[in-house]
Length: 203
Image (cartoon, rainbow, N blue to C red; front, side, top):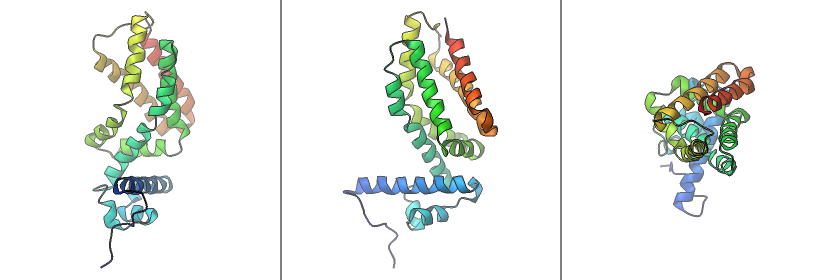
């Protein structure tokens, strides 16, 4: 019987699993660029990644898990750019810079809009929650900038930080949804959303 386990091509099993996972997500995204989410199949992902179909199920039970994993990967890629933007001393400039980094990375990547559009149209609430978990490491950068701005009198204080972040997220997500539906509005809508957030925070 032919083995469904791909040949190990990394220094250890953990590295091998990471390599295969990357191959699967790359293959999934390539297919998503070429066809609709409904047309993408596990078999096609396996074929493009060069692994047996059963291997895919070691990493994802279905294509919705591949979709949420792809979204998490794109969110995770923001960590280093945001970390660099967080070095700015002025709180207002720092927050604006981080928001611009986050939103620009979304616009500059050819696959990010496709992934998030598929997630918004086909993902369940649970899928969206799982994908959002990838942003947890990014939030402290924003919290610190807002806290510094409040202490410096640049931003007004909010009684409920969680509610504040829901408001900020709402403005940015609305801009993203608008861009997904009308790509030609991209830069303008993103800029307007960031201006709206900064204006709402200003003391």
